[in-house]
Image (cartoon, one colour):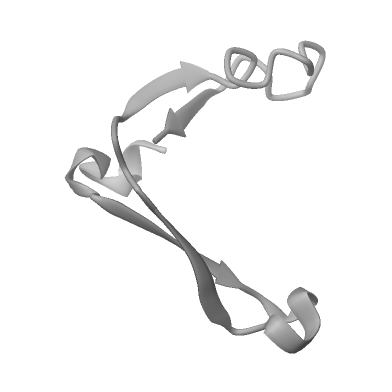
Length: 62
């Protein structure tokens, strides 16, 4: 994850829909403004999955 560079510079997220979305595939339908950024262990934002294989890995949270 350290190879991603400076993620704090992002101001907007775009959610690209792949082929699995059927008729609504290959385009961006949803966007979101980034209001903050932090890194957290996966188990923090997804606390209902404490036994997950990657529960202790650091994730980017925007």
